[in-house]
Image (cartoon, rainbow, N blue to C red; front, top):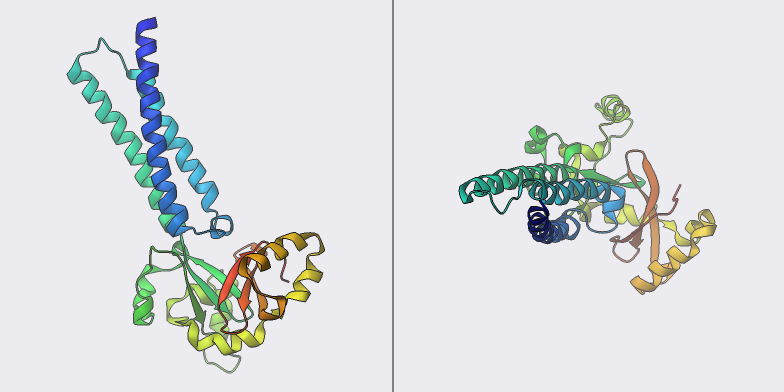
Length: 255
């Protein structure tokens, strides 16, 4: 019994090391491309990934610890290894597919705010209504785009308002996506001063000061707009006034 346990612990330890290596590779994909910082906080990528890794890293080595027996016939152990691999790879594939669905695909300028658009927010059947450059949801990180909003005099204004009330925001509708360059001048005009952001967040001065040092920009060179994702509203996008480009996202109250 002790011999089997020692051998099983050794095999499970090796399996754990391999699982951790796979976890590192998965983390590179998830946080390097799909959920670049700090969007993994806004879009919930960190929590999803921890659940995925907890299941995947633990289940394989535990199954190895339970099933490994050095006295077992080789063909039986190979069958066990195959079954363990199927379970573990199946869990990994399912978890990564869920993270792919939750990945941010756009940071969309929607009037007086930026909105995080995740792949699951978009009706894939409607992508054909988007401009050609937006008909494929990328996997290389979110792009900054603009959103065409309905005006009170438009024929679809009331219908658009009703859809927004139901949770289908304009930023989620492919037919309303536009290149961000077309919205840069009005975006710059809507920017709020960084001094106002300081007033709204008196206890978070270090966060703002750290961002300014990292960007090597002064407060006068920047403005901000709120950054939202559904019920999450406690973020802002710092935007360079010279070209209207968002350069940082911070966990500050912009409202």
